[in-house]
Image (cartoon, rainbow, N blue to C red):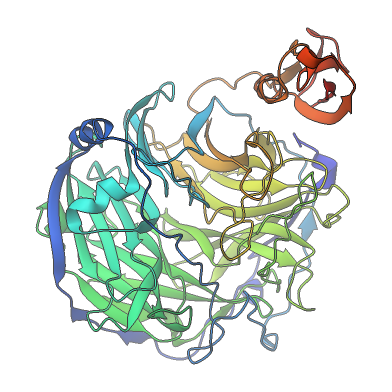
Length: 614
């Protein structure tokens, strides 16, 4: 929980000499070209008008299926494997052994409020899981597009200004079952960029993208769709998006129609000038056998035309690939993988291994790159890593790894937000689904989800100053305490979380940073669909730090258990043991006694035990 610094070891390293850097290939760069692809549909919409029209429609069930979750690839010809990509460790670079325990606390937030709760898509009764947590920060508004709803909030206080279901937003370009939403804000063009995919498993699979007409997301948008594969043989999953001054790129993983068999990676390259002119971007498709989950960088520069991309390659050998995109020419820099000198790790695995109070594990995803940023001539990225490396590929703890590279792809510095004593049952901290932002001073904010066997799933973050010693990171801070156990199994029987998160710099000053992270809310009922996620905004900088929350014990005697639980969570306390005791007929299901006196104050997340009539 909050600032348990003693439990957190930040495993760090930095390039102190040439011999400590990641090895660059001695081979030549490899360049790939693509072919023009055709926009299959285009539309102009107004967000506010869509929202008003959808509010007027009657509520009905949404006739969509859950998007299946392909988990990864082992080699270009292999079938999907359970997030395990083990190869022989690289003999070229030994893991660095520099470790340090952070003695500096990360600053507390200056703003903190709800982004989106787990509610049905507008006009439907269908809940979504996972939410695919992400959001972006504009001049005076925030945008939070999740698998359920696209929401616009006022930045000053989080008030919801408008919302529309994801399906309704993309329906004008022919989408039926859109999923995997992404959003970025470009402060140099003052535009919002969106991407998504549609129709998983089907020959009708689409890649979706859009650009706002102005800095106001409530206004007009140009939306586009293109066929993922015009032959219909494959479908697109897990779109990523990034931009530079001249280019927008969307990466996807391509799987065989009607199956989860990996086929290839693909990159859609868009001309940004054409997009800004409302002309579709002149899309070019580049097929990349063996590539998986390429992450284009958000380019925080008004002049940088090259768009850089990072790709996680192999966990055990700690290898990655570094790409550059100039126009429609994609180059594998150095022509070969690089080795991260932080050393190898395990991909978390396909099982629900992340612990929580209540005994049900949560799926921790895999080690694909969660976000990438170009800032001040370098590229930064974050990802989930598991430990120990080796073994059967299913981690005993997870950490968030952050890395800085130069524009040749060489390692500059990095570290791991990690609790090395943690395991699935001892209350140690697991960290996963990391994302990062880097501001004009090279300060870094890393956001993530936090899991413990004796607590509910929390939202958290850590901060490093640009003047901190290389490889160091401030101690983690809990942004939003989890409120209850999370159990929301999908058809594939996994208790899904994530799949990602977002952290971005405020365009108003290029210094303040925001993160949006997932946490567990109070469940509804019991059973395998009772869990509820929530997403929460936190702002670091841009104003005085808020007071740290404390548990101000509320009075809940006489209330029904669900109402009492919500009051306890809202007071920054945590529901403890619930004991059912004999009571009168009118006392059935109501709180008869609470363990802590109403009005008393304790550290945040203190447990309040209850006795409830049966």
